[in-house]
Amino acid sequence: MALASHFGAFLVKNKILSQGQIEEAILNQGLLGGRLGTNLVEIGCLSLDELENQLARFLNVPKAQPQEFETISQPLLQSIPRRLIDKYFFLPLNRKSKELRIATANPKSKLMCAEIEGVLAVPVVPCVSSEIRLIYFLSKYFNLQVDMRFRSMFMKMKEFNDPDAHFNRTKENLMQKGFQPLDKGEELTSEDFTDFLMRESIARAQPQPQAPPPPPPVTFSIPVPQARPATAAPAIAIPTLAAALPVAPVAPQVTIADLQSHLEKIQERNQIADWAVRFCVQYVEACVMFTVNSGLVTGWDAKSRNPQRNYNADTVKALVFPLETEGIFQTVGQTRNHFLGRLSPKTFNQQILTALGIRPDQDVLVIPVFLKKRLVNFMFMDVGVQPLSHLFLNALLQLGQWLPGAYEHLILQKKQKLSENL
Image 1 (cartoon, helix red, strand yellow):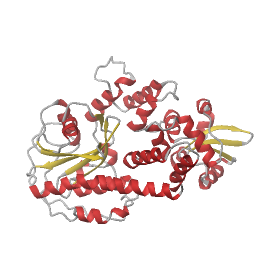
Image 2 (cartoon, rainbow, N blue to C red; image 1 turned 30 degrees about the horizontal axis):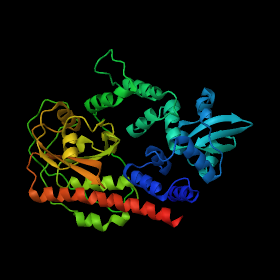
Image 3 (cartoon, rainbow, N blue to C red; image 1 turned 90 degrees about the horizontal axis):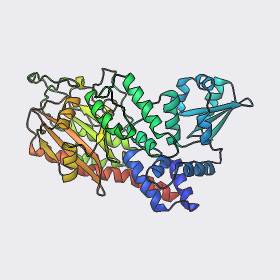
């Protein structure tokens, strides 16, 4: 975090960018995550090549040249244990003169270099590269899974001279996992990608049973209410993530005031999502939090009172669809108001309900979240079989007002670190 702030100060001091541009990137970073440089490229303040040139100057290390990524030999790739790639997020470039030249976003990491040298018995020369370029080529050579945010960037960037190549690899990977185009003879292009992903990921967002994820590194713990026994609802003949068993409401144990009093403990954006969904399941059966970026809605985090549903960040991140898709998200985003009730029978609405294991005869609550007039999140909640009381609804609507303040607190922390280094 400090390194990112120092890099922003470096760019301002050297008159590469203005403080306002750095603060705009910090805002984007607070909402979407990623490195400061990634956000500077995403909002158009720097090109990819300019970013990497400035990183090399700032860190005083060699730059990994773009052409080096295209000529990596298969024997070299096969000589690197995958566990090292996953642990340190680097790419071997070449091995010459008894040295291994690697591309990394953390060229100053002595621990990384020491472990690689210990495993491979060869001196390492770390060269700096951008997070964006590393993700692109790690997906190419090591089948790294890439989220939609980076896929969208790849398709728009001239640095990757074959923008459809990443899409084709992604399509191949999806089809190997059982994804199929609706039209079996359909040749998909990058322009069709979002539509393809929306149709197929929603239809197949069926998380498999897995071990419970480790608890998040949060010092402020929201107790999750225990489900009370309830009468099972009538079975409904649709494929779902899991049976949507109704759970009786319980008395909330954490209030908005409690969240507000712990704002100073927020250190990174995933804590905001974790606190938000855990707060919501005090009042409703399940909650899914979505991010909004560049016209795409993407699953971010989720919780459910019913453990059979297996709601978590890993199981909902496959849900990606255009905001302009006709349905509940488009309506709520345009009206800027929450929705409470049963969804209309529009195809997209029913796909969402099916993917999330929600019965079509149950109420849902959808709350949009705005930061400085920018739509940044949707909170999508399964209310369950019992009506939502006005008291509970007001508490959940207050969360929609708390979230922008939580983001602003996190962004302010980053801006303060920037100012300290100017």
